[in-house]
Amino acid sequence: MNQQKVNAPALEIKAAIEELVHAYVECIDNDKLEQWPDFFTEECLYKVISRENYARNLLTCVIYCDSKGMLKDRITAHRHANIYEAHTYKHLVSGIRMAGQEGDTYLVRANYAVFQTRQDGITEVYNVGQYMDKVTFVNGEAKFKEKLAVYDTALIPTLLVTPI
Image 1 (cartoon, rainbow, N blue to C red):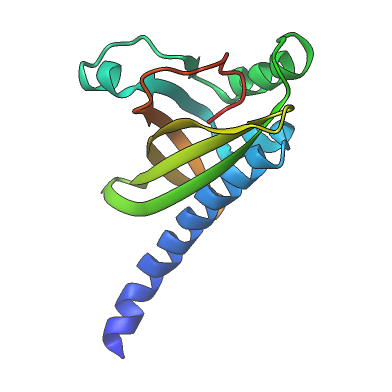
Image 2 (tube, rainbow, N blue to C red):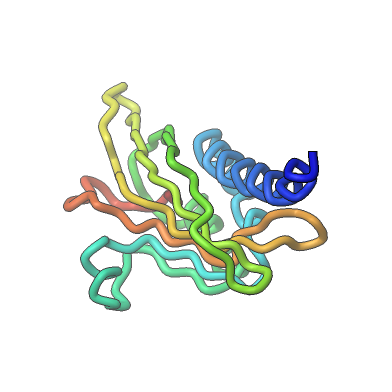
């Protein structure tokens, strides 16, 4: 019984982080993008970057936002300025793992696959990779302090406008 008490907080933290990851992709998949910045802390980092550039520590990435304000701006541009073919996403996320801890920040890894369906009804694998996240708790709620979508996909077939 003592072992259960010791592990209970760790299990609650893991469950909260898993819920954050699943709610995050559900928000994107259901096109509730105005809510997307709420998954992040005020000071945050969001990048979509190729595995090659990540491995070489190169700065070039497809999407770069270094504050919650930039995330909000991205969604405003997405809704009002960008021109792109209408589409929907469906994420599959697996292998959510706690990879470590730095102070009050949890290092989290998960594999993802994003399927894109266009207006013509054709569904394709759009982007595949690994989330490399830093999660912290703000007022008891799990939030992304940093979210990297490190993609394996060699070619992104269309303009990447919707967050991964």
